[in-house]
Amino acid sequence: MAAYKPVIACNSGGPVETVKSGVTGYLCEPNPEDFSSAMAKFIEKEQKQRLRNVKRQILF
Image (cartoon, rainbow, N blue to C red; front, side):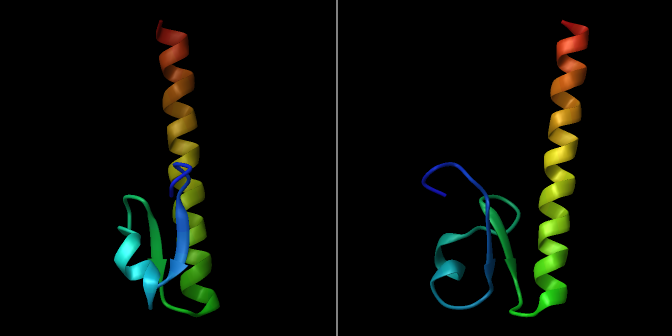
């Protein structure tokens, strides 16, 4: 987070106090299904951002 990178963390302990889910990262339950779902959300968000950047470059 200090390096402006999103975080995927379990929804317990210290991360709950420092990570704002959906803003600075993703909080999930400590099981593989929830963790993989958080990773998928992150990848989807990154792909949408890259597409927007490409569209901006084409328009300007």
